[in-house]
Length: 114
Image (cartoon, rainbow, N blue to C red):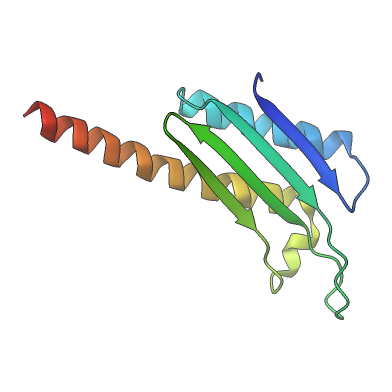
């Protein structure tokens, strides 16, 4: 996908996680064709608590006239020790947010044309 940036912080690069992000980004851009670009950052911050390392995923999704920022930093969700699940959750949240934006734009355009 053109316009996709993926970076890893505090964790080694994973081809499998990168491929998972590419698949999710591909589905997102297939659903919303006005996406200009996606920046994904996967991090495994050093937590000094007993909870273990939790994956942190942030997305910046460029749309015409605005950027949607999604951060999945769920310190109480142990399933986020699974990077794949953290990535999936971030993209699900992004899909809901972008759908809201599209619905508002469509509604506004419909009212303007009426």
